[in-house]
Image 1: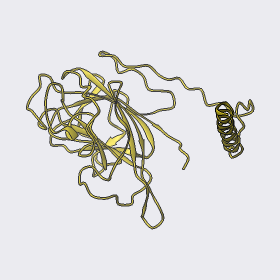
Image 2 (image 1 turned 135 degrees about the horizontal axis):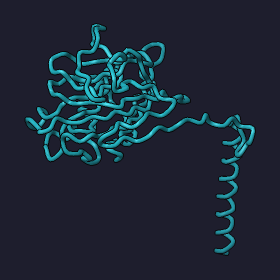
Image 3 (image 1 turned 120 degrees about the vertical axis):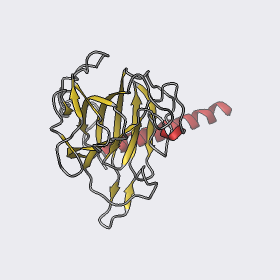
Image 4 (image 1 turned 45 degrees about the horizontal axis):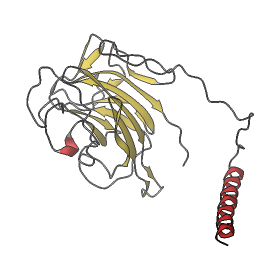
Length: 257
């Protein structure tokens, strides 16, 4: 009796699972393993960077800094970026102001490499401070957090003011570090109501530090979301520290709602 009952339960589970699977398949345009389904585009994936080389962006990426000039960046007033370009990198020139991409972005994969000043100067938030501010609203903190303590949601790898990183994966100042960021922008309806908050995933030096976390609104103010465009410029922060950047590229993401 117990054996038959078990068989019925298992059978029901399999039937239910099969029905669910078939239903899911019939709701899709393509059947499983359909050989007529279009193949993904083949792209050259580029090459990883090293301490002495910035590497190479994927073939389908938009390169925002090619090691030569800041023509794809500007200050808020539209004037040419005044940060210093040298030897394949560019460096914050304190008190010149943040710089913004001339092109707006929404959902994206973003790669940024940065190096903190060496020898280190200052402590806490006054130590190699900058920031990657996605859409000019949602900041991933850049800071020298190698053997340096600050508030947890303000250290390197944090979604500023909202989420500390899962671990501190910082390298010593002077060494090149990497952020790989997957960002999904918020959505608003025609009346300006939030229909989907922003989400972000961050890898710091190859280590997952933010796992598809939900951003609660603009990170600088702590205020609720206000409706904005689906695409806005990317911003790098001048926080009066000579942080260096190189090998910045973006891949626009196509997502389904």
